[in-house]
Image (cartoon, rainbow, N blue to C red):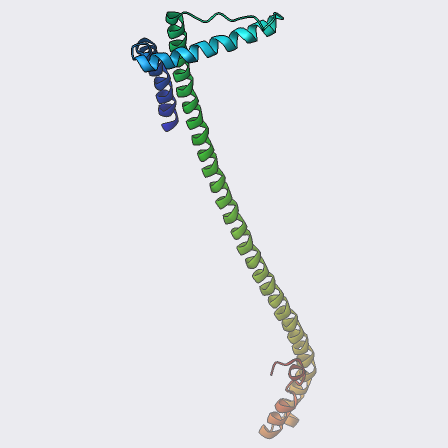
Length: 197
């Protein structure tokens, strides 16, 4: 929204500068000291442009250059001042536009830099989370291996001791003390070796 307003403002400034330049042209010759100053500028400009034209066309530049009369010099100087004013306003507007766009680009670059830093921080956090999950998966794998070892030990223990318990419940072993002794003898020692009692 602000960019069109700024562009319209610079265009309006350029447009306004033309009537101001015309006013400068008109009032330039009225002040005596300023009039002498601009006449000297106009004569120097006339000499320079005449020498350049003679060199371009291959004529001798040693010839005497006739100065402009006072009215033509004032008119030429007023034209130079008007054009100088218009070009200086346009130049200032251009410098302002360049600075404004460079500031906008710097803001965009800073925003991109902040976004990149946020992405890098997020990546570091995700890498830590992945490492934590790997450690948890490894711990679960260790627990699963130990559980499988316990299950295998329990299967070995139960198949051996089931027979002892069955025999202990037959009529010959029905006494309470013998049943208790067979139960204690059938307790599995394989679980103690694994580390789970």
